[in-house]
Length: 401
Image (cartoon, rainbow, N blue to C red; front, side, top):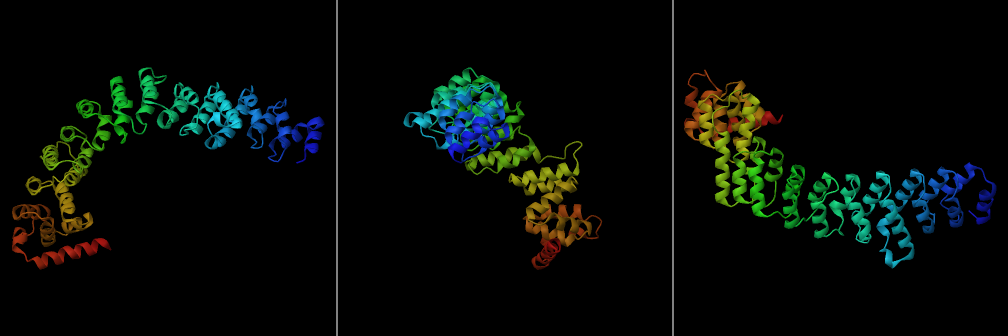
């Protein structure tokens, strides 16, 4: 658009024409600069959002009395921010950063949050701007920079932990990558359960071994900490063994499956899991509960021959069928079919594949194929390997169909 055409609209154009000019990305910068003082807030909002609007107008628009105008400018500057050099290196960049700083102190939290999202990872952002956002009392504003800004120092973080503008400040800092042991200790010292839980779930946070040991003790009561502790990398062996004594049952398998423990600690852990889960059925335990218990024991490497023998002799059908399926690596449907048809030889074949001893296999066959004349005579030691394998293969093929 030519400047002369824009001038005619500015002189006597109706509101619709001025709005169209304010939206036009080809409008002369001089016209857009003039329109930022238009009486119609919709026109000013369009000017603020227009990528052709000159940087010289940013400070005025950032102080506009209409929130919608400032919000439009915030959106525009959010797009520009990643490409801006530090303010001291470029005059136009200085204008943009100055407006961003104005908006970072805006009365509207939505506008401040837009700025925070835009600058959260930018190393070129002015440090004062980032500190302003980090100290904001609204988590939508402080959260992004607390989690990700590279400009916040350990001293900054410790100051915010000591005097958090909001309780959510602590949780946001706890989620920050590469937290130092000093900051982690400060967070733990606050006693904020949510922040400590977030810290434990932060896989890159450096936490002293002594601090972890203390948190493990408290986790017996603070159940929300148990899962992040179980899944925490480089968990001290004594902490892992201690957790096995009280964590929720569904966490025992991932705890025992850890591959970073020394052999002695891993053996202690499996023993602890077995102690908790391998006993007799609990009062009120459903078939699903029993099956889940067997699955957890298997995942923990604690579903031993002795455990299967005890369960079979106790008549725990759901536990034994689930355990047999897992140990033999057979589909559960194949085990169920063998049980439903009382096929003692098929069950014996799966016992052989599961690596169960003869006494255990005999007990399992007797439990899952009861009432079959001479069922105990088909124990694996009395049936040929070929027939047992044939029956197992047939069940596997049937389950796959």
